[in-house]
Image 1 (cartoon, one colour):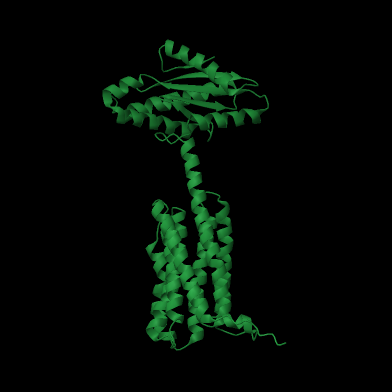
Image 2 (cartoon, one colour):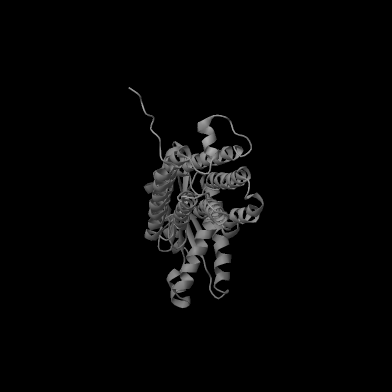
Length: 379
Protein backbone atom coordinates (compact mmCIF):
# COMPACT_ATOMS: atom_id res chain seq x y z
CA UNK A 1 0.00 0.00 0.00
CA UNK A 2 1.38 3.36 -1.00
CA UNK A 3 1.26 6.15 1.58
CA UNK A 4 0.38 9.51 0.10
CA UNK A 5 2.03 12.35 2.05
CA UNK A 6 -0.29 15.06 3.28
CA UNK A 7 0.24 18.32 1.43
CA UNK A 8 -0.90 21.54 3.03
CA UNK A 9 -2.49 23.86 0.51
CA UNK A 10 -0.88 27.34 0.75
CA UNK A 11 -4.09 29.05 -0.35
CA UNK A 12 -6.10 27.32 2.37
CA UNK A 13 -3.48 28.21 4.97
CA UNK A 14 -3.53 31.80 3.76
CA UNK A 15 -7.27 32.05 4.23
CA UNK A 16 -7.00 30.38 7.64
CA UNK A 17 -4.24 32.77 8.72
CA UNK A 18 -6.11 35.85 7.49
CA UNK A 19 -9.30 34.80 9.29
CA UNK A 20 -7.38 33.94 12.45
CA UNK A 21 -5.59 37.30 12.42
CA UNK A 22 -8.90 39.10 11.96
CA UNK A 23 -10.47 37.21 14.88
CA UNK A 24 -7.48 37.86 17.16
CA UNK A 25 -7.31 41.52 16.15
CA UNK A 26 -11.03 41.95 16.76
CA UNK A 27 -10.74 40.23 20.15
CA UNK A 28 -7.95 42.55 21.26
CA UNK A 29 -9.74 45.67 20.02
CA UNK A 30 -12.97 44.54 21.67
CA UNK A 31 -11.05 44.11 24.94
CA UNK A 32 -9.87 47.69 24.55
CA UNK A 33 -13.44 48.95 24.10
CA UNK A 34 -14.31 47.36 27.45
CA UNK A 35 -11.55 49.32 29.18
CA UNK A 36 -10.33 52.36 27.26
CA UNK A 37 -7.41 52.87 29.65
CA UNK A 38 -5.66 49.89 28.02
CA UNK A 39 -4.81 51.67 24.77
CA UNK A 40 -2.08 49.14 24.03
CA UNK A 41 -4.79 46.58 23.25
CA UNK A 42 -6.06 48.71 20.37
CA UNK A 43 -2.56 48.91 18.88
CA UNK A 44 -1.96 45.18 19.28
CA UNK A 45 -5.34 44.43 17.75
CA UNK A 46 -4.50 46.71 14.82
CA UNK A 47 -1.21 44.86 14.41
CA UNK A 48 -3.04 41.55 13.90
CA UNK A 49 -5.40 43.12 11.38
CA UNK A 50 -2.52 44.69 9.45
CA UNK A 51 -0.50 41.46 9.23
CA UNK A 52 -3.60 39.60 8.06
CA UNK A 53 -4.32 42.22 5.39
CA UNK A 54 -0.69 42.19 4.23
CA UNK A 55 -0.44 38.39 3.96
CA UNK A 56 -3.83 38.14 2.31
CA UNK A 57 -3.17 40.86 -0.26
CA UNK A 58 0.15 39.34 -1.32
CA UNK A 59 -0.92 35.70 -1.53
CA UNK A 60 -4.64 35.34 -2.29
CA UNK A 61 -4.49 36.52 -5.90
CA UNK A 62 -4.17 34.02 -8.76
CA UNK A 63 -1.51 36.03 -10.60
CA UNK A 64 1.88 37.02 -9.13
CA UNK A 65 1.52 40.21 -7.08
CA UNK A 66 2.16 43.46 -8.92
CA UNK A 67 4.55 46.25 -7.97
CA UNK A 68 1.82 48.10 -6.08
CA UNK A 69 0.55 45.00 -4.29
CA UNK A 70 4.05 44.04 -3.12
CA UNK A 71 4.71 47.57 -1.95
CA UNK A 72 1.47 47.89 0.00
CA UNK A 73 1.24 44.30 1.25
CA UNK A 74 4.74 44.23 2.67
CA UNK A 75 4.27 47.77 3.95
CA UNK A 76 1.17 46.59 5.82
CA UNK A 77 3.13 43.71 7.34
CA UNK A 78 5.97 45.99 8.44
CA UNK A 79 3.47 48.51 9.80
CA UNK A 80 1.89 45.71 11.85
CA UNK A 81 5.21 45.11 13.60
CA UNK A 82 5.49 48.85 14.16
CA UNK A 83 2.05 48.84 15.79
CA UNK A 84 3.18 45.89 17.90
CA UNK A 85 6.14 47.91 19.18
CA UNK A 86 4.03 51.02 19.78
CA UNK A 87 1.59 48.93 21.80
CA UNK A 88 4.45 47.74 24.00
CA UNK A 89 5.60 51.33 24.58
CA UNK A 90 2.08 52.45 25.46
CA UNK A 91 1.63 49.49 27.81
CA UNK A 92 4.72 50.69 29.69
CA UNK A 93 3.40 54.29 29.76
CA UNK A 94 6.25 55.46 27.54
CA UNK A 95 5.95 58.45 25.17
CA UNK A 96 6.79 58.62 21.48
CA UNK A 97 4.60 56.52 19.21
CA UNK A 98 4.30 58.07 15.75
CA UNK A 99 7.97 58.04 14.72
CA UNK A 100 8.82 54.56 16.12
CA UNK A 101 5.69 53.03 14.60
CA UNK A 102 6.01 54.59 11.14
CA UNK A 103 9.76 54.60 10.61
CA UNK A 104 9.94 51.03 9.34
CA UNK A 105 7.27 51.43 6.65
CA UNK A 106 8.85 54.73 5.60
CA UNK A 107 12.19 52.98 5.07
CA UNK A 108 10.44 50.22 3.10
CA UNK A 109 8.60 52.70 0.85
CA UNK A 110 11.80 54.66 0.18
CA UNK A 111 13.87 51.58 -0.66
CA UNK A 112 11.26 49.59 -2.57
CA UNK A 113 11.79 51.19 -6.04
CA UNK A 114 15.45 50.14 -5.89
CA UNK A 115 14.92 46.54 -4.70
CA UNK A 116 11.66 45.63 -6.47
CA UNK A 117 13.41 43.42 -9.03
CA UNK A 118 15.28 41.40 -6.37
CA UNK A 119 13.28 39.00 -4.25
CA UNK A 120 16.37 38.43 -2.11
CA UNK A 121 16.84 42.11 -1.31
CA UNK A 122 13.14 42.51 -0.54
CA UNK A 123 13.32 39.56 1.84
CA UNK A 124 16.41 40.92 3.58
CA UNK A 125 14.99 44.40 4.13
CA UNK A 126 11.54 43.24 5.22
CA UNK A 127 13.05 40.70 7.60
CA UNK A 128 15.44 43.23 9.09
CA UNK A 129 12.61 45.69 9.73
CA UNK A 130 10.16 43.15 11.18
CA UNK A 131 12.87 41.39 13.18
CA UNK A 132 14.11 44.72 14.48
CA UNK A 133 10.62 45.70 15.60
CA UNK A 134 10.07 42.33 17.31
CA UNK A 135 13.42 42.68 19.11
CA UNK A 136 12.57 46.23 20.19
CA UNK A 137 9.18 45.04 21.46
CA UNK A 138 10.84 42.32 23.53
CA UNK A 139 13.38 44.83 24.89
CA UNK A 140 10.62 47.31 25.71
CA UNK A 141 8.60 44.80 27.72
CA UNK A 142 11.69 43.49 29.51
CA UNK A 143 13.66 46.66 30.19
CA UNK A 144 10.89 49.18 30.82
CA UNK A 145 8.23 47.05 32.53
CA UNK A 146 6.14 49.09 34.96
CA UNK A 147 5.30 45.99 37.01
CA UNK A 148 6.76 42.50 37.10
CA UNK A 149 4.01 40.58 35.29
CA UNK A 150 4.37 36.83 34.73
CA UNK A 151 2.67 36.93 31.32
CA UNK A 152 4.88 39.83 30.27
CA UNK A 153 7.97 37.66 30.73
CA UNK A 154 6.40 35.00 28.48
CA UNK A 155 5.61 37.68 25.89
CA UNK A 156 9.28 38.73 25.96
CA UNK A 157 10.30 35.16 25.12
CA UNK A 158 7.76 34.94 22.29
CA UNK A 159 8.76 38.28 20.82
CA UNK A 160 12.44 37.35 21.07
CA UNK A 161 11.69 34.14 19.20
CA UNK A 162 9.78 36.11 16.57
CA UNK A 163 12.74 38.45 16.18
CA UNK A 164 15.15 35.54 15.72
CA UNK A 165 12.79 33.89 13.21
CA UNK A 166 12.55 37.03 11.08
CA UNK A 167 16.28 37.76 11.16
CA UNK A 168 17.18 34.17 10.27
CA UNK A 169 14.60 34.27 7.49
CA UNK A 170 16.31 37.37 6.15
CA UNK A 171 19.59 35.50 5.95
CA UNK A 172 17.96 33.22 3.35
CA UNK A 173 17.90 36.22 1.05
CA UNK A 174 21.69 36.04 1.00
CA UNK A 175 22.22 32.30 0.73
CA UNK A 176 19.93 29.27 0.77
CA UNK A 177 20.81 26.25 2.90
CA UNK A 178 19.83 23.44 0.46
CA UNK A 179 17.57 22.10 3.24
CA UNK A 180 14.10 22.20 1.63
CA UNK A 181 12.00 22.90 4.71
CA UNK A 182 14.36 25.67 5.84
CA UNK A 183 14.63 27.23 2.38
CA UNK A 184 10.82 27.30 2.17
CA UNK A 185 10.87 30.13 4.72
CA UNK A 186 12.72 32.23 2.16
CA UNK A 187 9.74 32.22 -0.19
CA UNK A 188 7.08 34.89 -0.02
CA UNK A 189 4.65 32.42 1.55
CA UNK A 190 4.88 28.73 2.40
CA UNK A 191 2.97 26.15 4.45
CA UNK A 192 5.85 26.01 6.93
CA UNK A 193 5.78 29.75 7.53
CA UNK A 194 1.98 29.73 7.74
CA UNK A 195 2.06 27.02 10.42
CA UNK A 196 4.67 28.95 12.41
CA UNK A 197 2.58 32.13 12.38
CA UNK A 198 -0.66 30.25 13.09
CA UNK A 199 0.97 28.88 16.26
CA UNK A 200 2.76 31.99 17.51
CA UNK A 201 -0.03 34.46 16.67
CA UNK A 202 -2.72 33.14 19.04
CA UNK A 203 -0.12 32.48 21.74
CA UNK A 204 1.10 36.07 21.56
CA UNK A 205 -2.45 37.44 21.54
CA UNK A 206 -3.27 35.34 24.60
CA UNK A 207 -0.22 36.75 26.39
CA UNK A 208 -1.31 40.31 25.57
CA UNK A 209 -4.76 39.61 27.00
CA UNK A 210 -3.18 38.04 30.07
CA UNK A 211 -0.89 41.05 30.50
CA UNK A 212 -3.90 43.37 30.41
CA UNK A 213 -5.70 41.21 32.98
CA UNK A 214 -2.66 41.21 35.28
CA UNK A 215 -2.28 44.98 34.90
CA UNK A 216 -5.91 45.59 35.85
CA UNK A 217 -5.65 43.20 38.80
CA UNK A 218 -2.54 45.03 39.99
CA UNK A 219 -4.21 48.43 39.62
CA UNK A 220 -7.32 47.30 41.49
CA UNK A 221 -5.15 45.92 44.26
CA UNK A 222 -3.18 49.15 44.44
CA UNK A 223 -6.37 51.20 44.46
CA UNK A 224 -7.58 49.19 47.44
CA UNK A 225 -4.36 49.99 49.32
CA UNK A 226 -3.72 53.62 48.35
CA UNK A 227 -5.43 56.73 49.65
CA UNK A 228 -6.94 58.53 46.67
CA UNK A 229 -6.31 62.05 47.92
CA UNK A 230 -2.74 61.87 49.19
CA UNK A 231 -1.42 58.97 47.12
CA UNK A 232 0.10 57.29 50.19
CA UNK A 233 -0.92 53.95 51.74
CA UNK A 234 -4.36 53.91 53.34
CA UNK A 235 -5.23 52.48 56.75
CA UNK A 236 -5.50 48.91 55.49
CA UNK A 237 -2.16 49.01 53.69
CA UNK A 238 -0.44 50.71 56.64
CA UNK A 239 -1.65 48.10 59.16
CA UNK A 240 -0.52 45.27 56.86
CA UNK A 241 2.94 46.81 56.38
CA UNK A 242 3.28 47.60 60.10
CA UNK A 243 2.45 44.02 61.08
CA UNK A 244 5.08 42.66 58.67
CA UNK A 245 7.69 45.11 59.94
CA UNK A 246 7.13 44.17 63.58
CA UNK A 247 7.35 40.47 62.71
CA UNK A 248 10.77 41.05 61.10
CA UNK A 249 12.09 42.90 64.16
CA UNK A 250 11.87 39.76 66.33
CA UNK A 251 11.14 41.66 69.51
CA UNK A 252 13.50 44.61 68.95
CA UNK A 253 12.05 48.05 69.85
CA UNK A 254 9.83 49.84 67.38
CA UNK A 255 8.40 53.34 67.48
CA UNK A 256 5.03 54.62 66.38
CA UNK A 257 4.40 58.21 65.31
CA UNK A 258 0.77 59.33 65.30
CA UNK A 259 0.04 62.63 63.51
CA UNK A 260 -3.03 64.83 63.73
CA UNK A 261 -3.23 68.07 61.73
CA UNK A 262 -4.13 70.95 64.06
CA UNK A 263 -7.32 72.96 63.55
CA UNK A 264 -7.99 71.28 60.24
CA UNK A 265 -11.71 72.07 60.33
CA UNK A 266 -10.89 75.77 60.68
CA UNK A 267 -8.73 75.56 57.52
CA UNK A 268 -11.61 73.96 55.64
CA UNK A 269 -14.07 76.57 56.90
CA UNK A 270 -11.87 79.56 56.09
CA UNK A 271 -10.17 78.51 52.87
CA UNK A 272 -12.52 75.86 51.48
CA UNK A 273 -12.32 72.11 51.11
CA UNK A 274 -10.01 72.34 48.09
CA UNK A 275 -7.42 74.08 50.25
CA UNK A 276 -7.92 71.48 52.96
CA UNK A 277 -7.36 68.69 50.47
CA UNK A 278 -4.20 70.46 49.29
CA UNK A 279 -2.90 70.61 52.87
CA UNK A 280 -3.55 66.88 53.30
CA UNK A 281 -1.66 66.19 50.06
CA UNK A 282 1.25 68.31 51.25
CA UNK A 283 1.49 66.34 54.48
CA UNK A 284 1.38 63.08 52.55
CA UNK A 285 4.22 64.32 50.35
CA UNK A 286 6.30 65.30 53.41
CA UNK A 287 5.85 61.83 54.89
CA UNK A 288 6.93 60.32 51.58
CA UNK A 289 10.06 62.47 51.57
CA UNK A 290 11.02 62.00 55.22
CA UNK A 291 10.08 58.37 55.97
CA UNK A 292 11.01 54.98 54.49
CA UNK A 293 8.62 53.60 51.89
CA UNK A 294 5.85 51.48 53.37
CA UNK A 295 6.33 52.70 56.93
CA UNK A 296 3.47 55.22 57.02
CA UNK A 297 -0.11 55.76 55.92
CA UNK A 298 -3.27 57.81 56.29
CA UNK A 299 -5.58 56.41 58.95
CA UNK A 300 -8.48 58.64 57.96
CA UNK A 301 -9.48 62.30 58.00
CA UNK A 302 -6.52 64.38 59.13
CA UNK A 303 -4.86 61.54 61.05
CA UNK A 304 -1.72 59.77 59.83
CA UNK A 305 0.63 57.20 61.37
CA UNK A 306 4.07 55.68 60.93
CA UNK A 307 5.87 52.74 62.54
CA UNK A 308 9.67 52.77 62.40
CA UNK A 309 12.38 50.33 63.57
CA UNK A 310 14.09 53.01 65.70
CA UNK A 311 14.41 53.87 69.38
CA UNK A 312 12.54 56.66 71.18
CA UNK A 313 15.27 59.27 70.67
CA UNK A 314 15.49 58.76 66.90
CA UNK A 315 11.72 58.64 66.60
CA UNK A 316 11.39 62.01 68.35
CA UNK A 317 14.02 63.50 66.05
CA UNK A 318 12.18 62.27 62.95
CA UNK A 319 8.90 63.63 64.33
CA UNK A 320 10.45 67.07 64.91
CA UNK A 321 11.78 67.12 61.35
CA UNK A 322 8.32 66.37 59.97
CA UNK A 323 6.62 68.87 62.28
CA UNK A 324 8.95 71.68 61.19
CA UNK A 325 8.77 70.86 57.47
CA UNK A 326 4.98 70.79 57.52
CA UNK A 327 4.74 74.07 59.45
CA UNK A 328 6.85 75.87 56.86
CA UNK A 329 5.40 74.25 53.74
CA UNK A 330 1.77 74.30 54.87
CA UNK A 331 1.83 77.97 55.84
CA UNK A 332 3.38 78.91 52.51
CA UNK A 333 0.67 76.95 50.69
CA UNK A 334 -2.00 79.14 52.30
CA UNK A 335 -0.16 82.33 51.44
CA UNK A 336 1.21 82.87 54.94
CA UNK A 337 -2.24 83.83 56.28
CA UNK A 338 -2.70 80.86 58.62
CA UNK A 339 -0.45 78.74 60.81
CA UNK A 340 -0.49 75.15 59.60
CA UNK A 341 0.77 72.75 62.24
CA UNK A 342 0.65 69.13 63.32
CA UNK A 343 0.63 67.49 66.74
CA UNK A 344 2.58 64.24 67.07
CA UNK A 345 2.44 61.47 69.63
CA UNK A 346 5.37 59.04 69.89
CA UNK A 347 5.49 55.61 71.48
CA UNK A 348 8.34 53.10 71.64
CA UNK A 349 7.81 49.53 72.82
CA UNK A 350 9.93 46.37 72.58
CA UNK A 351 8.16 43.23 71.38
CA UNK A 352 5.18 45.39 70.46
CA UNK A 353 2.08 44.69 68.47
CA UNK A 354 0.63 47.27 66.10
CA UNK A 355 -2.43 47.80 68.29
CA UNK A 356 -0.29 48.41 71.37
CA UNK A 357 1.90 50.96 69.61
CA UNK A 358 -1.07 52.85 68.17
CA UNK A 359 -2.80 52.93 71.56
CA UNK A 360 0.29 54.28 73.34
CA UNK A 361 0.93 56.81 70.59
CA UNK A 362 -2.71 57.93 70.76
CA UNK A 363 -2.31 58.69 74.48
CA UNK A 364 0.79 60.75 73.68
CA UNK A 365 -1.06 62.56 70.87
CA UNK A 366 -3.88 63.44 73.26
CA UNK A 367 -1.34 65.02 75.62
CA UNK A 368 0.17 66.97 72.72
CA UNK A 369 -3.27 68.36 71.86
CA UNK A 370 -3.94 69.22 75.49
CA UNK A 371 -0.54 70.94 75.77
CA UNK A 372 -1.23 73.51 73.05
CA UNK A 373 -0.70 71.59 69.81
CA UNK A 374 2.20 71.85 67.32
CA UNK A 375 4.49 69.79 69.56
CA UNK A 376 5.90 66.29 69.81
CA UNK A 377 5.06 64.30 72.93
CA UNK A 378 6.52 60.88 73.77
CA UNK A 379 4.56 58.31 75.76
